[in-house]
Amino acid sequence: MQVAVLGARGSVGRVCVQELAKRRFDAIQLHRNDQIPQEVNALIVASPVEHIDFDGSIIDCSGSIPQTSLSLPPLLETRSNKKRIPNCMASLIAQALFPLHKQYEITSIITTTMQSVSGAGWRGIQALEQHDTTALFGGNLVNNVLPHEKFDQEEQAIKSDLHELFNCEVTATSFRVPVFIGHVASMRITTKQPISPQLLPEAKHFDPRAMEHKREVAIGRVRINKNTADLVVCGDQLLCGTAIPAVDSIVCT
Image (cartoon, rainbow, N blue to C red; front, side, top):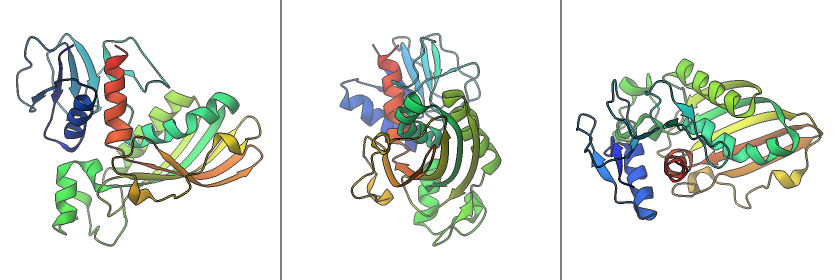
């Protein structure tokens, strides 16, 4: 299978290329306006596009391709030719909560998310490096916390994707924090049945700053009261939240 990454220079695209190489795919790296070579039969869309003319398998990491089916292997697999990876924060939350949902059925999720600047791409990383964040994030983010610059869109994306994955009520409030890579979600979940602590294994050393390049999510601060649990989830949203599910979706095609 010949795979290409559209938007390969962006923060998501670069990590997708790295993950493909790790799994012995020789990915063609495309920029946003490049033509897609005829030999390509699977395309990861890592940056938003207005239009795409491609008949092969599409894995959308940008949320810009219409009429796609949600894909998060192995939690949710689809045979559709046009797949969409969930919002990266929703992806991390879903990976952490799915074993619990499978056993007890989650009925509600209330979450506050703290999202790093790389969620806004390389511009976000450069803005924080240069201490010039106002234009992109709507205020001074250096040593500060701000509401997500697109909080209405971000919160709706988290709610929509988690509702589709778990069929439960979701409330989300999103903030931007002065961290380069890694998203954190503090949440309260409710299930139909009392929860066993074994299905929410806590990391021995829970440190969101140490999650960069890690291939799994971490769970911490777990507090359980019958069918309610308070906990914190964190992970590398570029790798674990996006690139790994995208490549997994190709493998499942």
